[in-house]
Image (cartoon, rainbow, N blue to C red; front, side):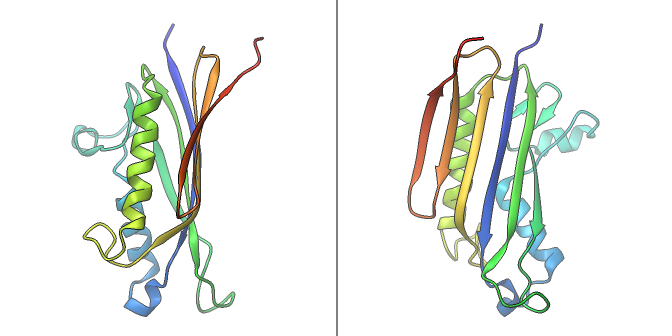
Length: 158
């Protein structure tokens, strides 16, 4: 039987990329790059080699940016969108490493005008849940743009 780790999360991204001339496709590309390169079971070897997020034997954590804020159309909004994070990691049980990866992603968004964040994106809120199959706890990580809190919650025995 394989060990599985389940990951679910979201990051709300704020910013003003339109003021800097960034297209929506460029915005999506930049934000996904900041979160990391992923791979899945069917990815070619070069994508597996480029993967820099926690990864199990059948693929990595996945992420997708969805634009929800648009300065011309649904009104002016500082909210750019959300990054959805999910994964079913086989043969991977290092929840600490997943939480550290998540914290590093959040710090990239906090470092305004850095080489990672040259367009000044920021985080309003972010949440991550990590469950290692068979463990008696589940780990949550929450960020609000100022603080990052990690908490283990004991689960009821079945």
